[in-house]
Image 1 (tube, helix red, strand yellow):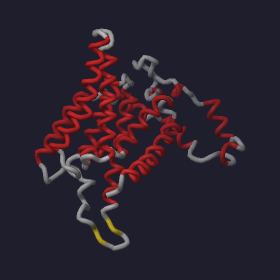
Image 2 (cartoon, helix red, strand yellow):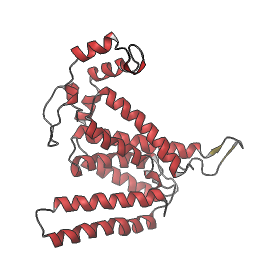
Image 3 (tube, helix red, strand yellow):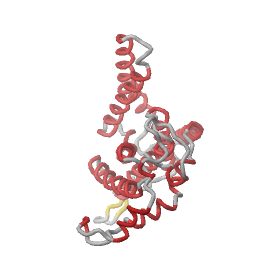
Image 4 (cartoon, rainbow, N blue to C red):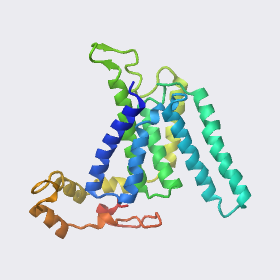
Length: 276
């Protein structure tokens, strides 16, 4: 399989390309684009979370511990004393970093259910839930982060399959077919558990109408098509006529969109629904 450095490098390139398209399409504000891009990079190493004592596993559980400990701290900030908040923060940090890490690796198997398309779907929906309910992001941004997570996750699985083929020695390694699979047929219980978790996640997930309406906006696709190549010389040395007309004539509400500063969505035109 590909090593950690390769997964990070390729995952960053793929996610960066997707982020460039997203920025050019003007469907999300830059400050939120950074967050959803990081979700894609995380997805590019997430399948190796089941590899005990690996760098991805240690890093991800450390990151999860920091995230959830501060989430608990901020949510309980007005209800408890400083001493109690310290206990809650430190307890959550240690519980996730060491307790959850230990339990997880006792029940998981490398190249098992976490190396599957079903796990990619679950992780993507879970990302949408985290962005919406824990980070307070609007529905459209939450599902955009889910797409980035899915792309990063599938990139990891695809790389593992590619590295299972020894091109120079013209042979297929025994690991071929263990990464890019829909479910883990070797462990039916794990697959069933992941399917149930995915079903629960779907029920808890945010509404998709904002995200779907944003992607189906004709103005978004028209603007993206116009920006594929420069109208004149490269790197803006000469502004082409269609670039100037786009700036002058096309609505730019997509920069502010329907998402307010408080993370709450308001009604807006269909082409504005994916904003910020």
